[in-house]
Amino acid sequence: MRLPLVAPGCAIVALAACAGANTATPVDSCTFANPIGVGADPWVIRHNVAYYSVESGNGGIWVYRSNTLTRPKQNGARVWTPPDTGWNRTNVWAPELHFIDGKWYVYYTAGRAGPPFTSQRAGVLESVTADPQGAYIDRGKLYTGDSVATGAHDVWAIDLTVHKINGVLYAVWSGWLDNATTDKTPQHLYMARMANPWTISTNRVRISSPTADWERGPELDLQEGPEFLEHAGQVFIIYSTRDSWLKEYELGQLRLRAPLTDPMNPDSIVKTGPVFTGTSNVFGVGHASFTVSPDGTEDWIVYHSKVDVAPGWNRVIRTQKFDWNTDGSPRFGVPTAPGEAVRMPLGQCQTP
Image 1 (cartoon, rainbow, N blue to C red):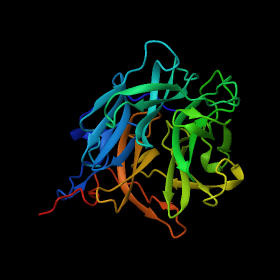
Image 2: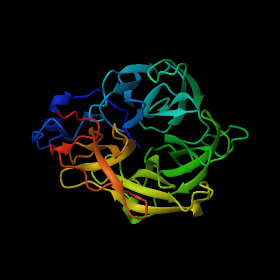
Image 3: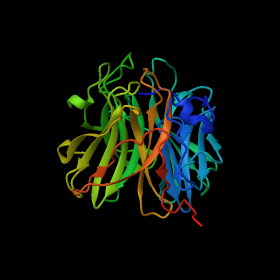
């Protein structure tokens, strides 16, 4: 669970100071330093020669276009404004931008009231043109309950993402066992098949719950922010766990046992974790997305962290390169220190 993104409280040039970080200067023009922006729940995708990122805030959902991974929030365009009434009028969270069968789709979370945030559901926008920053139509709320045949009794859902496995489109999201009157309710990961990018066609299946010791928070046990990641024929779901407002927020991993196994069978999934945690000066790492360097040869994780150890949702965006273990699983390493000089993604730095 997370609060909606608010307008930045400090300029990009002051990020290190705003985050209470070491303000070391990068050693040359081919390096950068984290954090790279203010915000939360980052989603960055590379398409053709540009990076597109999406976020909520300032009255709607915005899509940005940038030539550089380390400065993703450039050339922003608001692509959607919440309605004045209805299920999705407020608390717009964690949008994602996906290119599916020649069209762009934005998946987002929203609600009709809150706090408490007990009415959150998942919705989807569909592009009208080939431009990810162009016009979208609202395809409505996605069904996230236990009776897809009737559409009755949809259940609280956030952070919905989609991915094709063996040619079939699936949705995965964070949800509750049942609707509740408090948002301090344990969150699980659910999966369902989709008939098309705006229609869930099967009842949800709970594929994972926060049962491991490293997933249990002092206030709330949760799994959220699921994101698909594929490598060398293996399918992973990287998700966030523990209390999102505390410094212990971290990443866990689900792996599909075999490429052709049923991803909606919980017995087909292996849990590992934590796979990415904070340090003494980087707190509460979570809700990651994955992209590649401009030359396509490197894998990069984009994630958020808290600016300090105090409980709350004051967060910044970070990015760094990752690689792979011998078993094919991702190796994210350790969050780079604030202000540390980090080599630019390959293909981004133009050397003499």
